[in-house]
Length: 418
Ligand code: HAM
Image (tube, rainbow, N blue to C red):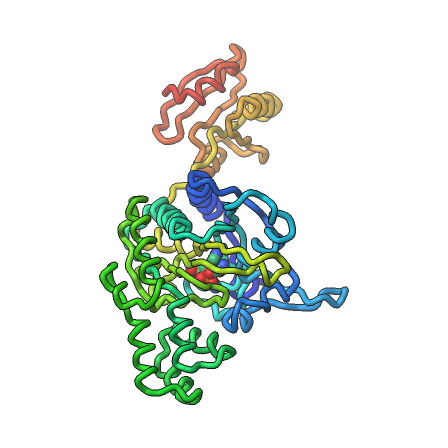
């Protein structure tokens, strides 16, 4: 039996309905914040991701040559494509530009619960603005999205990659090694980071102070430890967040992010219930447009890991009940099949979701199928009732039945008049 490739999944109808339902919630939050949807190709020139995504993404890239010999990659994320799109066709639009996207991304990772090779991101980019309000706007939308899932147990941590980059430069790490060091700090691999830094000639006390900086965690009071303007900047971000009603955030200078393009504020949200793969959302401010041939433009964005936030909601005990159809039409005898077809057509054109027995089943079996299809009503078409233009309408949950004129069926069903 051929299975779907490792790290990918099929979504069966019940699961798919649930995914669309929650996707709808994210979409409505994005609209509520004034963001508009875009779509970009699923594959791009590999260069788009090679230029700045950093070593983590590079080693996980699904890249290949197409039949024309071009280097192509499946998108591992959607920020670089969104900014390429902005440079290609939106650069002259009034700023700031607020866009969002939903779609699959591909990373050649070791699959486990919450980590897939094909996964879905719901993300947003606020392009062309560099103010504390910009960052607060983006973080508060991320928070609203998490809340829209009804999640209770989650944490939003805000850091500043500029502070870390500056400290790393000050202690003498060569520029070309910065990404490697940040990668170790991101994963909190201090035992691996130490010999790496020592090998670059960094003094032991500087290594300690760098590690200490990444362990700076707490409320705004810890910002006194943040050197330079970054501390004041983050304080303002937090004030705006508070004005937006988002108070449940924590300062954490250990937020490094796995991608290389961030320049300023960075943030992550985690749902501890997920265990190892608990990061449900990540983002920050960055510049990428100048790499893709445009002017340098500051942006802030984030992406929610759609699969993970769904898992988190599930772990918190949230269940989604698939809706099912409104009506299932079945014939008591074979001679009623054409009549049933007319009835199902009239229901459908009245906007009622309706299905029909097309297998000529006996009534008991057809009713069983109707209940598996979660039909709210069964419409039973019998010759005797038809003599007066009526059918039997059966409420599938109570089993209650009544005679209804065929022409009244749409209003009976839509009006739920049992
Ligand atoms: P990221 O942190 O690499 O950021 O990915 C965003 C989210 O996607 C993660 O927080 C996680 O929930 C989810 N995710 C990542 N890899 C996997 C995987 N293998 N399986 C399941 N879920 C996964 C970005 O991609 C940035 N583009 C976010 C951003 C937008 N920054 C600025 N704008």
